[in-house]
Image (spheres, rainbow, N blue to C red):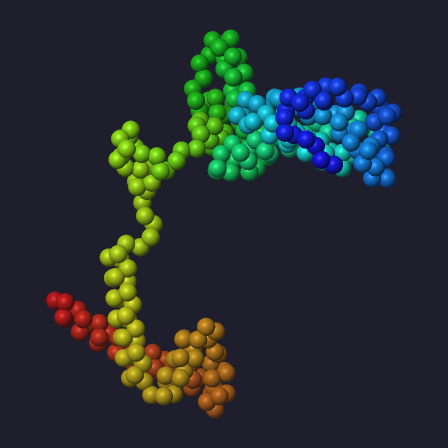
Amino acid sequence: MALDFNSDNSLSRRAMKAELLDAETELRLAYAWRDDRCEESLHRLITAYMRLAISMAAKFKRYGAPMNDLIQEAGLGLMKAAEKFDPDRGVRFSTYAVWWIKASIQDYVMRNWSMVRTGSTSSQKSLFFNLRRVQARLEREALAEGVVLDRQTMRERIATEVGVPLHDVEMMEGRLSGSDFSLNATQSSDEDGREWIDTLEDGADQADSSVELKHDTAMLREWLLTAMSALNDRERFIVRERKLRPEPRTLESLGNELKLSKERVRQLEAAAFAKMRKSLDNQSREVRGFLL
């Protein structure tokens, strides 16, 4: 069923003129929709309670979202409620729909509040919609008692009042303290001023580090090839199969292929590593002597 949300004023006027359903009629329409998928019954049910959706949407105008968008989200929540409503539970549809309408509007507000995801947990969502209200009440109560609350004490009381962790209160205070800030904005009013993004540290490798890493890698590769050339064919095979394969082979599998015992393969491997270590040490000393 489609609803026309092109004009919130016209929709509000139509909603105010819609019929008021008594409990018996509401129940009959709910059964007709659930059991027979009667779209006419669904339309009457949705239209009758659209005024409720609009009324709830108006309570969220202070978050800066367009009223027409809020009404649309409220209408979607109302239709979700109609889809999931079970008339056998003995609850009025309006009572059930309130929760779906509110959830739909809140999700929309939080999705559009900031480019950064806000309220990813239930405690953060509760804080987003209640922090300012609870804080204002606590301030009034403290003023009436002649008590001045510092920021940390206020945060602790808010956390206790809302039932959320203290670190969530600290995080949400920061998120609600201002709107998104563009990193492409200049640091001064001067048009040629540096942008804020220019102050961020570049996490990529710097040119000198890249050149140094490339040089060292090439040198180590040359050293390794030289060390491998000092080995005989069997030793090179063992080293390659044991250390240079994505999945190294076992001593036992190499022994079966070379027709040697597992212990003999281990001895050959140790001897090959000793030769390579000696070659690498000699090359390292040559480099150090050259640098000195």
